[in-house]
Image 1: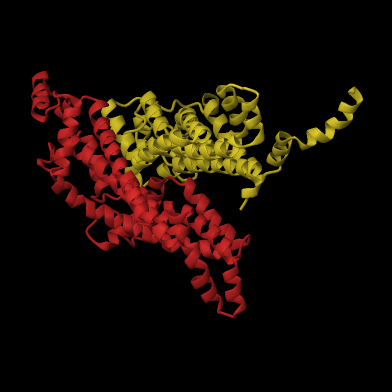
Image 2 (image 1 turned 180 degrees about the horizontal axis):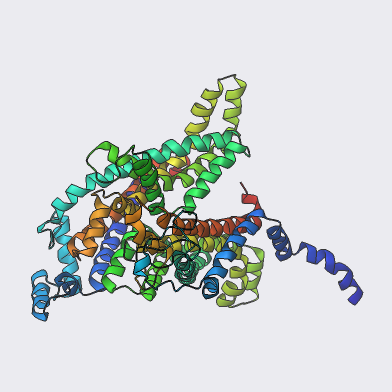
Length: 305
Length: 299
């Protein structure tokens, strides 16, 4: 197990290192950062001054190494638009996205696991079909459209919930539903197939034969085993949500990382953009690592085989 | 000899996998439903000028925000009303599908080529090649798609070509995952080993033996990614960094109508419904192909 973890840790470190190169080159090689930062009305002298000030005139690998060295030392750079340290800016926005991600995942699990279990208990019935249709419809609905629909129904028609901002917990309900819905098809399908497989296994049949209550059989002996792959899928889905929250955060004006990224892109705030790219990619890499380790811890076949 | 062939032919033909697949496809409900919707949308996009007398970019500022015909203030002159600049909404809806479909098909060609090449290579050679390609795949999955696309489009400058290239270069991951495992299953089969034994070139084995045998899963992924690409384009356009005016897509129409949500929700619902119908149709077709080519995996 320790060897497995060490190996996975090494791969994750390597992935984050390469991702940092990609994040850096995306921002520095796809355009002239000095021109982007100076804005449309800047004179050539202004552009030159910015280039000198931020060191864009130095070789690209030198700039990269300086950036990484500072990043490791805890200095994330400075936002030229906000005139603040990138570290402070991120610290302000990360909690909102983290909260949104966790709530969205919670919603997704609360909806998809019961649906998956019921679908597995009654395969090819109305309930099974309904669950499948919810999943299929979820895949066809663009997230921003679903978000606008939620705003219209719960914010405009019913006036139950606030639709913009992030000051109270009620502001997080609609965004979490909008974001979490996209994780439901995958989780539901995995729960369903896992449950169907487990319910046919010997130990569940034995538990039934012993006359245990149906609930006990399904939850203690069935779901406990079927849920193993769902745990790691959930961790990966959380990673996807952190990256995908940009659309939802923009629609609901939630001041999280995605909203910050969207604003920073429009302001050509390069230091912030590359920091966000790296943070989100690193979060995803770490979450996949957690998923792998959880999987191995819960299912001995993986770490031994 | 000739008589023998002719008597054997019908039963062999009836059993040929291609025929069986075709017959199963034609009996499949999802195929007809999905194909029907997709055909209507494709025809509407192609025949756009014949379907509406209006120019989708013509602005009639005296007739802004006319409601659709089912509203009491609507008229048949503009069946779906007009938008905030007085442009005919039906014309915009019909023409708007063009760019969405173009982006979808072109990006799937790009991402399919990249992803399949990587997947087949990883599956066929295995070992270090597989490790390397797997690592590249992990890196790709680690990068958040929407964010990377937004950054590149914003920094490189926005054009239709760049948009298609960016989306195509980002969405190859699923092609690689699926073709890799399909190729692995093929690589150990007798007919591949036989081809190797008679000295067929690697290129020939990959193109003539492996590729035709993984078309089933390939079509399924292509349908998923076609939907994915169209959704991504819509999301980018919605965020203001996708398709730029004077070009427009359903995603951009929704973005432009965002502020009308409270008073004129139909401006969002109409292009939204078109988008959902398109994605739904593509998904149905993909499901039909999956059922036909991999019946053992049928749920």
